[in-house]
View 1 (cartoon, rainbow, N blue to C red):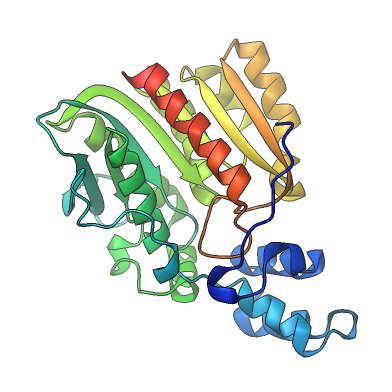
View 2 (cartoon, rainbow, N blue to C red):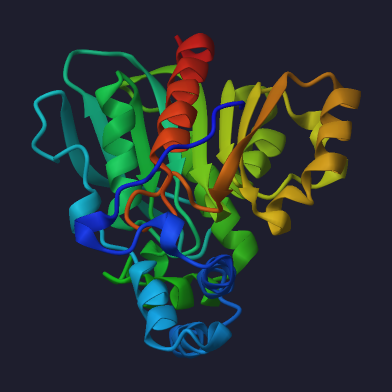
Length: 307
């Protein structure tokens, strides 16, 4: 990507991305991935370079504001949305629940499973599912936290709950969700997957596990699949990475080498100046230009391979 992302307007008059010290972004990444708790995140941010209250304000600005980030209403005339439950043998409880959004019309539709971050099915991911459906795809956003009561209404508790799950069984639950969607009566038999952060890594896992049963994958800043599994990938991959995301990006050189060796069709786009989470419009990590361009590429990828 050659374009330099433009200015991102602050949410509701709050601090914008360009006003936040990179060290605060780095602390937020630690917090988001469960390496520090909210108290430590806020305390350490407040002490950075004697910023005091300014550092604390930067940290608080990064916490999500989901109500102001909704782009597609659940009452939008282009879609129909409801929650569904389905069997998940071998998962954390044997049953899963997901947010199913279909375009208006008779179908069948190409299908896309939408995989959440490391905190369950929050409002941002539900909005992404609605965005997918508004483009003409049958979308399912599974809630990996369903076996422990579902997304609890806030990301802190959601992150804690997700960490308590058997992670292998959680992957099975998400794999079963993809298979459920592919076989849905409204689906046309062609399946895509998009995921963010943890969910991006799951997209890479699904590509290696589903093999020819997945027709297109789009991981957003998701860690690479295990190198030994790459030869099983059949789906064309469109990988979106943030420039300032060394933890994830460091997994890609070996991944790309393995993809080339296996003859897998793939693209990797690194978006200049962006932070991990740049597609999520509920915090100042959001980068409007990069999010828009990556989403246009995502929809074009799904149209190409799922029609």
